[in-house]
Length: 420
Image 1 (cartoon, rainbow, N blue to C red):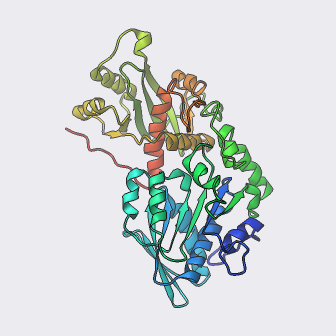
Image 2 (image 1 turned 90 degrees about the horizontal axis):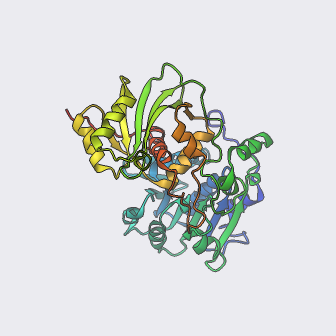
Image 3 (image 1 turned 60 degrees about the vertical axis):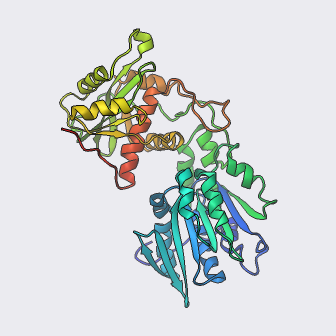
């Protein structure tokens, strides 16, 4: 795709259906909404977002629309940035208002505004309240809370408005699967299920590569496109991530902690070299086994011994451990950051980091290695949840990946000021 020379592989039949379902000559034109689910890299997102803009200009002028993702940062990265050069090559004029989170798009004397929203949690529903929209595109809708999705749909009160959904599968008891996927016909919704083979731009070698990246429930969901329940090990891909000797010359250091007094306390020292984060050593204390509980001050002393003389940039701490956060800040040696603590999002991020080779572990991290072999999904739960056992090193690793690695990918992360 050099310069402005945009080239697409021929569209598959399902991609063509997404692009044209609203057209006057389409057999699907009477549907009120479209829902595309299935495998990753199956060509859903670009076709749907391009079709959404084309439909908006065919149907309306001078109207507001919403494009929604899990976060505005992920929405810009996954939808807006790939879409804008395509629209410009097709003759659209696009102006992005970054601070106000909207796109002003015009073509052929028509102009429409597309607001960007992040549906991160239950409080996000208030952001979209009160608007009147001609339509809404919900990218990765299964990652958004139901209250946000339903509020967004309620905003589409204009005559001729339509809903556009896409997602990768989740747990088969997920509310969106039960309310929309299983009831698509009842809701007059065009349902199209995608596999990787519905994306003609993927070569056989790339198909094989993606198929080799996943295992367990993630393989069923992301490769086969099934709404499958998680089962077995949470991280079945773990196995080739041990390093014989920790590398010399790491340039950035962090500590991550899962706090426990009755439950085990786990803390890991991380060092970065060449884009890979190494768990160099760890401290793990189980009061049940040892027969004595420790105080915040004793844990802080252990943390300092773990860090040694290394220039640790910050300590990432279990956000519920208010007293330990206060203890670290009181000493003023290290900034203390409450960790991002979304469990399922964090597990996805750790899984991605393991698959991409971004995490390695020194052999001395014995409790981490032990927990990787024991940390399993709870098959009795009505949604994706890991068992609350053998999870203390797993939690501190998740805190580190979600707060530091994910923070770097999003372009920022906050460091608390050390108190002197």
